[in-house]
Length: 294
View 1 (tube, rainbow, N blue to C red):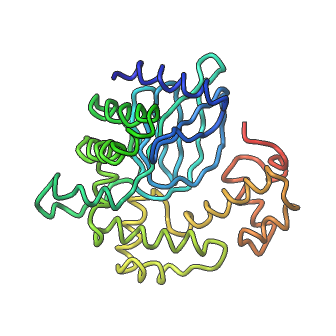
View 2 (cartoon, rainbow, N blue to C red):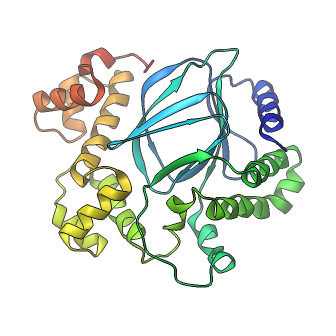
């Protein structure tokens, strides 16, 4: 199945679901769909490891100091949890942004290792988010997984194998480094993932860089270098991004006064919060109160 046929299949499913905008489950394991019918900017999300295939439209994502652009026919591979700011470009009700996403089960990915490479391989650090033109084999594998939604018996019998093939195609692809580096439990990328998990859990509090390096099992300098290479962020800025993303969502939902939100996400000073928020999003916190990102 080529990209256009896959797009038609997904459009039919979305139309039948009655969910015109946003994320929805596809009816098969680990796969979800996204449709956005209007251009949007400054949309915050903390994304977990995933594989995405853009079927229509264009999007940009900023994580740390890196900016990624991808459009119809591109695959995106995210190997670590990342706070992001995204923009959907030129979407309309007639030509919306549409993408299929597959969440990553690292246990299945690691079980594929012996089928891909019998050697140890190099323990290099690659960026956690990579994107580029999808190979035909991957498009076909994702389309086959999606088609299983039509028959629950087929999904039950063949879903695991279909999902495994998607992972296999990604690992073998030229953009697969973001996932390849996560195969070995003792790789640098997995050690950094342990530190990321700690930051996510404790981001409202005080986190010492030395503690993060210890969790990762690295010296302070090596930890900082690898963290920056993978996430395009310093550990401190990564923590701040989590705080500010959380605050933006709370502001949009008008959950509490600005000063109270600042305290809730870990800031001791509302003034410092306002400065860092404005620097991050280009507007003062009050402009986000009760308004969805547009």
